[in-house]
Length: 145
Length: 143
Image 1 (cartoon, rainbow over the protein chains, first blue to last red):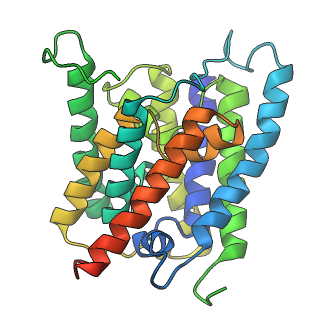
Image 2 (image 1 turned 90 degrees about the horizontal axis):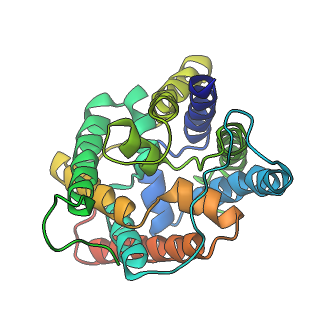
């Protein structure tokens, strides 16, 4: 059941990215190019995605548990930490440099596997660095905010 | 609206992404955050059950392939150097894990939940994204 839900969600997510032009780093970068040939498409994608999700959050409040688990597992909505802000700031820099965020990078394996592989492999190295720093066995200077 | 913009397709694709995230939330009780799910899928993060994360991540390119198969080639331009791509990927990997999310988890799921953390995260990565492109263009480092 978990596999089916994950696959259904991933399939529709990837299809949505493809339909909306988000697999084109040039278009994504144009959204971030406020002072150049600005392309507002990404704003429509995010706005469109928030409509079903806003409804889903309303439904979620009335559900005791999700369909395929005993409980909801949701992240905290507070506090604002230096780690949250610093990490997000870094993410935005990488997003601007490459015109890619994680979803489109993974979905792009269907279109341009070599480029997707380079970005994704480097991203995985980034994951591994933070994972290592966060582990108790890691360096003595943890990055917890 | 410039003629290269695709507001209609953007909106339709966005709605599909939102329904996908809703399936994850109401079906599995989890946030459809790609960075978190990807890290979990390859054993570099905690959280969701591995099966769920793997299935979600595998679904992403399959969904894109399905659209390409049904509707024809998908425009996907990569004019940047492989070195730029690698640096961008590394920074995105570190940033999304430190910041606990990316465009999907914070931008779509968290913003629609009115999560304070996600609102701050989204405004932050948008701001540094805008600034990065502006600076790169200004110093002539554009693609």
